[in-house]
Image 1 (cartoon, rainbow, N blue to C red):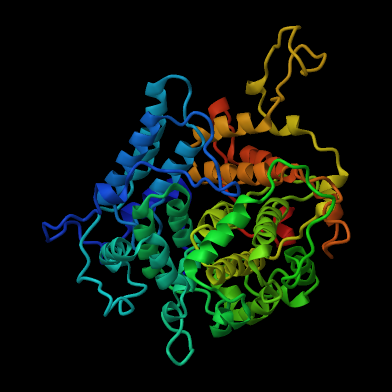
Image 2 (spheres, rainbow, N blue to C red):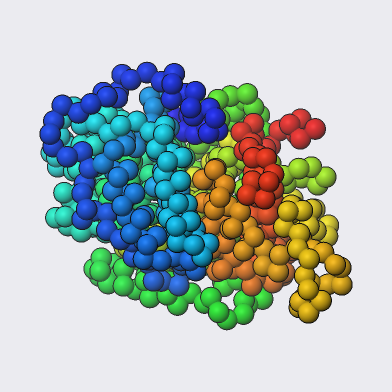
Amino acid sequence: MLLRTVHVHRYSRIVLRKMSTTSQFPTKSVTNKPLGLGYSFFPSPQQNSHKSTPQLWPGVSSESESELASLLRLDNEKHHIFFNDQGFHNHLTHHLFAAYAMGCSPEARAILRSVLSAAYKLHADYQHPAFKSPSDITENNWTEHLGKRDYYNAYMHFYASQINAHGPPKTLEKYVFSKEANLTPEGKQGAQMLDRFMSGLLHPMIHTGHWAEFHVPGMLAEGLALASTTPASSPHLFPPDFFDYGTQQPESSAQSIVDHAATALRNLSLNNPRSSSPSAYTGGSHSLDILHRMLQDPNLAAGKTCRQDSGSKFSDTLRAAGDKIREYAKMWQVDSESEVPQKLEEVAWLATLVYGLGGWRKGKDFRSDFFLLHLVTSSIFISSLLTHLSFSSQSALLRAQVSVILGWWVSRGRPAIPISDYYSREFDPSLLIPKALQVHPDKSAVGVGKDKTTNLPSNMWLAIIESSLNHPEEHLLKNQRALAHFDHLYGKTPQGYFEGETELEGAEFLDGTLFWRVALHTQKALGWVREGEPQGSFDRAGLGWDHLWE
């Protein structure tokens, strides 16, 4: 049981919850020891202040901050991280953080509080109660129960003790990125913690990313426990040579590297106009070059690495072509700290293209692939995590993210990235926006045209986020928040920015409008429910098989 049973549509969750067995889930704890971590691990959130990391939207208040902290503690105390025996994840807290960060507040404070409370209730209904693990986890036995979901609570408390003793960054470095956490003394695959961290459709990394962004240490303890109870599903992507840091820049001390990296990220330009072309690349191939080369590889075409009707496309793909995907991923390197901001940008474009244009074909409705969407919702946390890591770990995380993006893309049928077709047609956002947004502006209104009515917002993001905050599908809000963040960083990118810099066909047409365009496509596919449209659904069939577009 690997990644094919990570998520389901909300209606299916209810059915599966009722059908699930309870072999790993005792209904009550047999101890009086608290199951949760307590107040100190779930304080009021503090936003990461680096310019490259996500910023809070207007609307956040002391009331929403307090409500969030209270609900986080409640979830930690009452709920397990998996809500059934199939290994489906509890991402109640992910919804809460996203709604909090995006403001979740009309002017009425009672309404503000109700958005967070309603999100909590929406997910709490189907969670499994927390329970005590069969035995404790210690430094002597922490590798002995990896992949066992019933040890989640014990792992959580173990990592909490490590955080108390050593601090969050050192705990993350030691138990995810160090060679000891991944390899045996002989240099062979061992505990494979980075693999586990990036498995489960990236949820351990996503969960931990909330600690990195909001400085809530309980999210780190939970995220590491989730990683420890997740199978290592991608051994082909993380072989022993992945951890060969010998060619990386030498480190004088972990703290100096973290300080240097944080300075580099702080200096990432957000307010100056974008240059006409990217900085020179010194760390291997550009990620878009790799997309181009993989698109030309007949052995990675739809149906070559997995069947379209397979329920385990990702694991099938890695068994059939994992070594080949690893060879492509190795072309992308992070060789020095000075490259980190540029590599971070590449991840944003790569994830958005694979999900956004992978789900688009001329003359067809946009298909929001559930699995590829997670490449976007996970990538928003990379910048926050980087601010806590030494350079060797920064390199490992960035390279791991690109490896996983490429693997998931191939497993979904290696859909085309039709940039030229997409940008060759005039983009009409009014086709994606509901009539319910139509307004009747006064004649004195500025910039609304000569028509008596219009449904086009002057700022697309305000309409998108307002609608997403009330959508029952939490993945939509998380996706839109990520794309808004990428737009904040890279939205000024002009056409021609990539011209002559990459082999990918049509790359010269790319510009910063890509991020809000993809957000609009996604909003339409999932439904403007706040505005009265019915809820849409994700696509799980696979985007690369031509007959599914007919």
